[in-house]
Image (cartoon, rainbow, N blue to C red; front, side):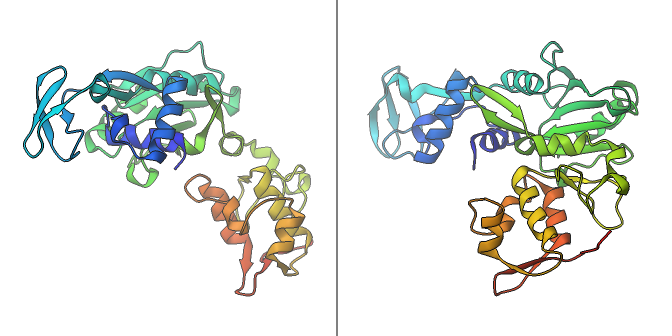
Length: 306
């Protein structure tokens, strides 16, 4: 689990007190990185877990002493009271910065759950970007639906969320749900947009015209059009390289190792470039367009000379 995915999980679970001393080695690395860039803020524990058995909350009788029902008197240090909490303001500022919306403060739509970050794009390509967390709560969904006509309107809307999209029910509105960890990547001290995800969200419809394409691909091979569909699916450079090799094979099977080598990638299997949680549409395209057998052969399923 990468650091941003872990942070999203903490927000979704409502975790407001993370104890670094109780974290395992893998979590400590994520915690330290997130704290270093400001994504986690310092706070103080309201309850302390016994530092010896790590099984019970202890009764604090002084700043340096407590009583555990199993261990008896146990000494405490300042570190035992140290807690970290996800800094939602930091996250919303960094998302806005990555989208070029730094001068637009996040505006709360549903307090503590949904914020409007701003609008991206221009004219017909303009999109309203929202951020939401813990959206599986029925009350939150109802409130958001009630506010939609007056506070969001008919504009194309992107809802970046820490909630699994399949758990969000917003009937009757046009909205694209994008997981936080798919929409952005951690870079340096902040976030950057994931190029493939945002390219897909803001794709120009005219680019899907068959006359301007190379087979099912855009001229730069950065999106692919599935059979009987009108909107292309955006691809990362790795995804593009793999599908391009298969397309150029003209339907002739190619062995996995040769395919990966020709795409100039470092993978065990081609499907690793199409993780479903992060790139659901690209993963769907891969499943539609690519077939393989148990002998390690891969081929393009819908080959056409057009």
